[in-house]
Length: 236
Image (cartoon, rainbow, N blue to C red; front, side, top):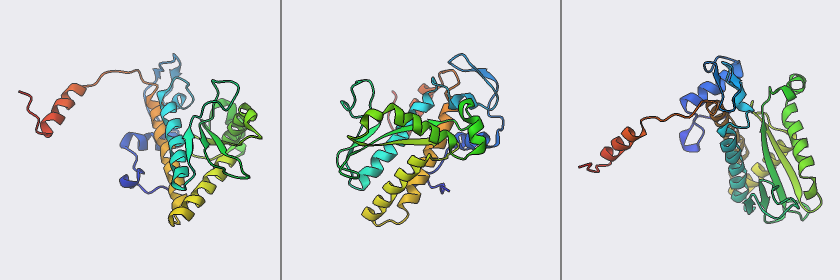
């Protein structure tokens, strides 16, 4: 459970909180509308969680990778995001790579994926097994990056929109959390790390739901003028 403390980045805004609860309960989140991809979105808004055209998926993916990157850095495991030249296919690259050995003299390469727990592909399995969708996604990632096996320790990091960790994701996060705790002396490091990941998943879910709405302009120019006045800047 993540405590709602803004200074720790654990405070959801009202819309993100509403959508997080609504998705869990299957409640109505929006009016029926057409997604920018052309698909009809029902009142639950769930389409956005799996839509490839939803901008929220990219921001969520980037945020989760940033957490892993910063956590590794906190325990003095230097790493880089999206390293080039690791695979024959220049368009394929994992999300991150440690620059120092992680285990057995090999560097760690990781790749994050977030899948919809209730997507049709995983629905049957998810009803029978907790974490089914995340584990299946991790297996797909491992096959995709099998070329890295042998030279690096590759870890697929799978999460579900309902917040469940895949087996390999859980193991990696626990190892990183323990290393951070040993380095900083903060025994709650693992708990804080899990909380941060959970918050980013829920924030990303909200962004995915909002990502199905068409873009429209607000009154940003008015608010910009108000900000100038607050800062004591003359408009004359």
